[in-house]
Image (cartoon, rainbow, N blue to C red; front, side, top):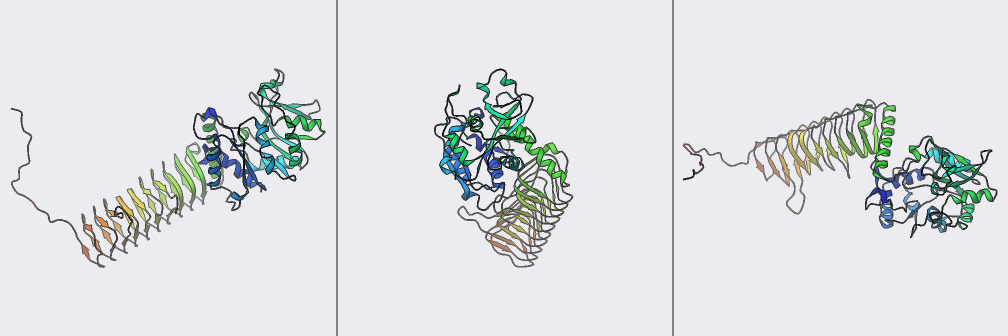
Length: 464
C-alpha cells in the first residue's frame, strides 16, 4: 500500500519516495517482496500516483531480478477511504489461487525472513497476522484475544475502549491471506466506525465469524515494523539501517574506525583487511578489494577499487555511469575528485586537488597536484605537472588528448585537444600545446620573456 499523502512529512514528495539508505522507502519494500519470489507485486497508489508509478518504472532494484519490473502492477486508490478500500482496488489484479501478502510502502526495514515465517503460518488456508508486543502500543490497532489465546479481532486505537487501549500487542499492518477468502471479506467491509473509513483489519473479525483460523507471527524487533510518518522517524530508521550495515561489514572482517559514522546508500562489497575511517559515504555499487584503505570524510559512488589502493581523506569519487576503476596499489587524494569514466591503472598516483573525468591512466602514471585530466588517455609512467589541464571542450564538442608513455608534462601547461604528446616527450612548463608533438622531443610553446629595466610602477594620485 503506497497511496497515503504523508502530511506530517511536510513535503511535496510522496512519502513512500523519501529515501532511506539511498533508496526510496517503497523500493526497500518491493525488493523484500521480490526476494520472496512473489508472482506479482501490486502497488496501490493514490497521492502522487504519477510520481510513484514513474519511480517504480525507473527503479534499479537491489535484488537484481531481471524480470521484477514486468511483475509490478498498479492499482489507483482515489479517493483514499481507508486501508480496506485501498486493498479493494487491487482485487481485479488478484488471481483466485495463491496468497496475498499485504505490506506498507512506508515500512522499509521489514525483513524477508520475517515474511517467510508469516507465510509459513498462513499455510495457504489461514489468515496470518504479523503482531508485536511492546510497552506502549498507543496509536496502533490492538489485537483482541480470547482467554485461550485465540485471535478474535483487531480494534483501531480511535475505536478502542480504555480497557482495550491497555493491550500491549498490536497489529503491524502486515498480513497474509488466501486470495479467495480475501476477496470475500473485502466485499463485506463497511465504514461503520469513528473515521468513516473501510478498515482492512475488520477482515479479522469476519474470519473468526466464518470459522476460519486466525494465527499470528512476530518480527524480531520493533524497528523492522516501524513506519515513517515524519522526518524524525525517517532519521531514526536511517540510523537503525546504517547500524545494520556497519555490523554486517564488521562481521565480515571490515575494520570501521567508528561504526556510528558510516553511511552506506547502496551496496558496499569488501574484500579482506579493508579499513574505513570515519564519516565516509558510499553510494550506488562500490567494491573495495583486499587491503584497501579509505581515509576519513570520503564520498565514493559507483566505483571498483582494487586491492591495496589507498583513498586518502576528503576524496570524492562519483562513478555514476560508466563508473570509476581504481587499480591495484593506486594512491588517490587527499582532496581529489574522480568523475565518471575515470580508469586508473595499477600504482597510479592522483594527488590533492586533481580532477579526472572520462580518462584512462596506465600503470605508474602520476598527477600529484592541482591538475585536470578530461577525456584523456595517459600512458605508463607519465608525470603530469601541477596546474596543468587538458582543454577538452571547444564549446560544442568534447575532444580527446593522448599522452603517450614516459611523457613529462611541466607545470601550468594547457593541452588543447585533440592533440597527441609523443612517447618520452617533455612539455616545458607554462606551454600551451595545440599541435601533436614528436616522440622524445622537448616542446615549448609560450611567449618570449621580456624584462624592462628602470620601469616604475604606477602610484596612486594624492588628493590636492
